[in-house]
Length: 152
Image (tube, rainbow, N blue to C red; front, side, top):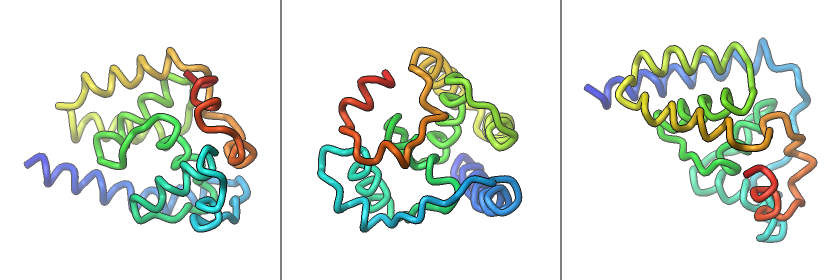
C-alpha cells in the first residue's frame, strides 16, 4: 500500500512540476548543463551539484534549478518522503510558496507515517541560516564546505 501511495506522490510531482514551471515560475533559466558543472573544481558547490545530478540521472530543470541546489545543501535524497521533508525544511527556513504548501499538505495526507520525520525536518530548517533565497547560480564556484558551514 505504501508503494502505491509513493507512486501517487511521484506522479503528482511530475504533473505539477511541469505546470508550475510553465505558468508560475518567472525567473531566468541558468542555461548550465550537468556536464559543465562536473568541470568545476571538486571542492566547489557547482561540482557537488553536478555530481548529484549525475548520480540521480537528472539534468537541471530550467527555472527550478534551485530545487536541486536545496537537495545538495541539505543532503536530502529524491525519495518521495525526502522530497516532502525538504519542503518542510524549507518552510522552517522561511520559504513560502503555493507549491510548497501543496506538497506539505498533500504529502502529509498521503504519507502520514513520516510525520515525525517531516516535523524534525521543519525544526532543522528553523535552526539553519536562511538559505532558500540565495543566488545559487552565483555560488557555483564557492567552496562547498564553506557554504555548508555558513548555512548550518
